[in-house]
Length: 554
Image (cartoon, rainbow, N blue to C red):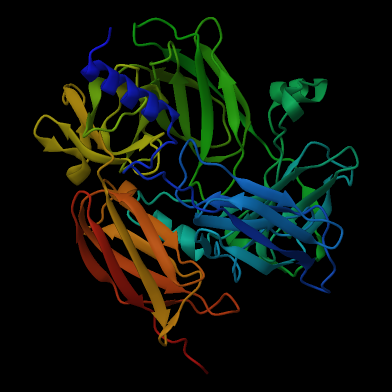
């Protein structure tokens, strides 16, 4: 027989089981409602709807787990992107035959960020697509015969944004950059499409690239003989200083023909000696034209079983000969030599690999965050000569080795970091490599590099105004103060959103200069704000305001 106390306890248990669940003090976390973005894609010329345009939202602060939200436009040019989480996105539309259009872009700039709050439903967004430029033509030899398999390149000057991004880096930047490329067919005809309106220099180069890796008899013959023709710029000159910049307007199909003339070329040959003193049989060599002002002829060859090489069809000029050997996943033995080519063959070159130093290192994490080390790799670029480089992939345990680092003073960069992570410190012994770079002299500099990464960076937000109004699509840049080629990797850029606001996350602690630039509606006459100084510490959350000057009227 149960005691009265046990009966009372049993009744209480039964009552508790049968009673409905009581609310707890722990509230259920609510998922913020998603957003919807819709609008239309039309041709800027006449408003014609553009069907099957790709419209995409890409997270401004991306990570490996970031998701791209996209949709196709229908027959009326309409699109709807649903179930988009609140956040900040780069927003653009693409369509074959038109220039990619970024949200609120006024020209060469990358437009504005689209900021979405929970539950937002943005409607009637309109992308006006500018027809792309096409450049066509024909390449003949001096006898009027069509030349097949000639590379024709459209070259452009870098944009203001690209020039800004180069500040603080070594100075050997190309003056002209490839914007589009095509290869002539059996009729000697070429067609470069998808170009933005603007000014281009057009260059024809006797350089054949196999399509999809297919090695044809034409390629084998070309490879055996080498080039016999000098590169030519439109309208038929061999020097960029004599070339004409050709302006092209939206939707224009410009026509430019070339005549390539045969010239006397020479053969360069020699041998490569490995780090072990024996002939190097697994070396790739290539010639780089000097100065490297634009896209040039690429002469590449491998050493044979005796460690010997021959490069045929080399035109007179100045070159840098590079040799790289990859004996293992880690190895990066290399050598370089400057060569002046005249009218005679050069057959006495000897390149010796493995004369640099080896450096070991370890990557560590400061704080509670974790990172997959094997996704990271490191790169060294010489401050004096960008052709002198070294690289290494980080192993799972965080260790790495830089092999055969040549002489020079090097800037250090790390690739593969997720958004929000930064390079906290970089040291070789007592030397701060982010302050003065890595100085290497033969026989000196052996040691262990200590790399420390962190996800405890600072967040910097703010706004940009002009005449007390928010500036949409302004470009905000933060640079270390002072900035050098050794800490340039800490420079960052961001664009303002539709409310004139910008955001940087995971910024390395330090002193920075912050400046904003904005373009007029026609994409010209950029105006800038005064530079502001800001000091950031770990986990700081700071906000600043920038004001750009009013555009000058004439």
